[in-house]
Length: 415
Image (cartoon, rainbow, N blue to C red; front, side, top):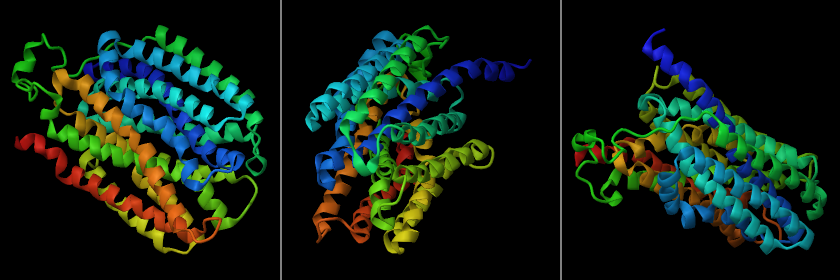
């Protein structure tokens, strides 16, 4: 067996384990996307207030994003993932007293605690999958993980849909499914602790490694001296926002477009189908036919086009432009992350924590979207045109990602 074949075979088990981790990350996000319209109905919230659901989760990334780098540096990737699952289990368990008290603020607290665990998990698992293999195929590994992640996005609302009727939301119905999810999270934490996951380090990450003397990071004294990373953080902020927005808004948009039809939660599958199709495209084509950089440029342009279709087409056709937008979003995370993490050396874990903080875009962009919907509507209930106006928020996000893909990440080589 050649060295390359041997290395690929040794990656199989770690990739399978990390695939499970990515699945559970997606499951948590999928639950929040489902709860946005559910809690809005249960507590008579405005559209803007309902997006506090995603805000509660993603605000944890800003507050605890930076400390995750310190935690991971102290205990390593595997133990960090274990602790993250235990914290997420606690967050899921807190849904039970929140449901019994019928308290929206308590729901937000539960979501925030779960967000803390998600923050630590993201900070550990994303750099791990980036540096566990060759950097030129990082986008492929990320795409494989993305398939697992986004399948969970679809399964989460389907799972909750067994217990909750969107047409007659009863918060008491949430108790049983969240007992189940709590148990799953706890078991996964124990599983990861004993799993055969090797500890890995990026090139030059070890400060005692003499190789750092010749690396890009050798003479750097602060993470702020990596402009390509800082631009990557902003690109990731915009990306996570426009990736989360379709999941958070699609049920409301479907309701205004098609009316109160059966199984509204099934519309969530359109977002997942677009993302998974894009990930499969990435696995097949990168880097065999297209580099991860060129793929990012192409998909950013496609994102702009799909958003304009979403805004200008009649509602019943515009709805399906969300699928095209999701397809264009698929390869952005896999491409942005390795481009931003390039040549960080001993600053790898710190850089990862900054990128994790950027995930707060998943709270900010949907919240801006919901606020715009409330601001432009002229009737008690928002109509299709109100949502289409609010979707303009996606255009500048795609434009900045396009800049980062075409030029921004290259500032590293110009300095």
